[in-house]
Image (cartoon, rainbow, N blue to C red; front, side, top):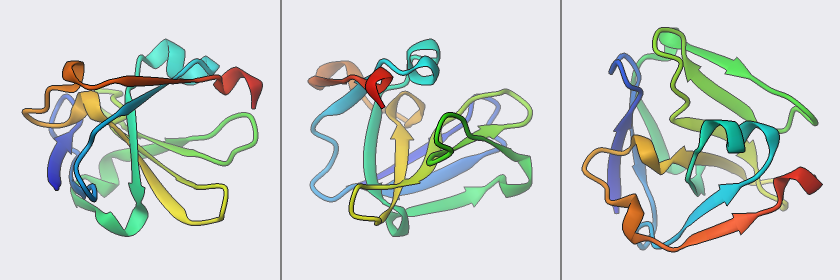
Amino acid sequence: MKYRGSCQCGKVAYEVDVEGGITEVMSCNCSMCSRRGSLLTFTPRSSFKLLRGEPDLTTYTFNKHAIQHRFCKHCGIQSFAWGTDPRGNEMAAINVRCLEDFDFEALPVKRVNGKAF
């Protein structure tokens, strides 16, 4: 199922295809996610298409520098990130709070102990 998302100011926009649709979201308690309040879903990087805003993005990494947190330089919103799964596949982590017309509150939340990583 295809979804569209963006940052708050709209300079960064994207489209993402999640096979079978989004049926669950993840909440991580690491120092970054807990402060940001993201609810995440994951999809192969090849299923993500940036529609606009590459020059408007900046990247932040921390800890093991395994995830590239992508932020809009103007409004500061991180609506997605790049990383790899445990098998080495390139993945996109999507903050479902940034998807258009998406009822994330209706989905079950899987809690992940990111502090342990």
